[in-house]
Length: 138
Image 1: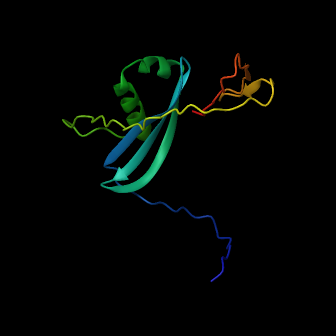
Image 2: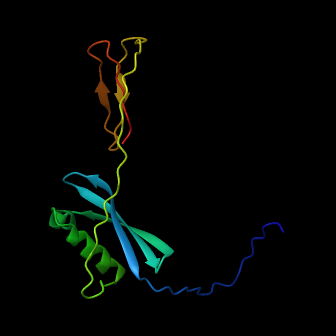
Image 3: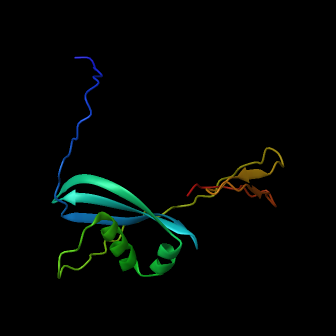
């Protein structure tokens, strides 16, 4: 069967799920400015959906070094409460090590390398000697 696009009369379509677990993770951090977090919603072991939140201003400041603040913030946004007496479990992520291998490269010319970071402010990197410049995206 081919795909058919059918216009229908607008009607509510609601699916109700029971959320039993939320995984909360910091996704992006802009130092002294904001943090974005992801909340992945589960019903037992079934994936239900995900939400993203940006904490800035007072919310970012109140986070400080207390991750419980982010947990409470996300749960409040979702309208959820933790099960009484159940501890919040921190699961550490095994971060893969990065191995840097020196590369013998002959420079083509003396043109500076321009790197544009996430905030779009150009940064000019001018090699001082014949050592190659290796830029790895974050």
